[in-house]
Image (cartoon, rainbow, N blue to C red; front, side):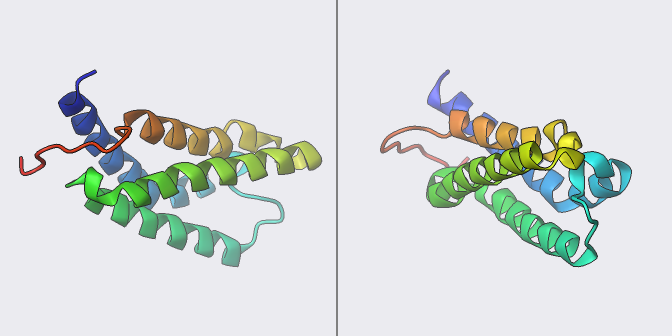
Length: 131
């Protein structure tokens, strides 16, 4: 894959992931609680998660304009998603009431991390991003 293709796909991935994080979490918690809400349902926790991920979504969309200037944000998203999904995966093993998360938010976070890590250019890449 050429660097230009990779950067274009990365821009689209940042926008799509950003939009999902901004507008997708609340409906998923409501429509598919077994995969997106943790027992017991805690409104305060849900507000916190929605606020954090909506904020991250806004910044990912902003980063799409020039991803190479926002490497640390993108890598933070990759690593924090891996850590979050791993912790939730362990919690599911401990608390069998939460098994639905293995089909919901756990794989969603792994997918976000994998897509962004795959599309991020490696090394000290420079590209004219004035397009």
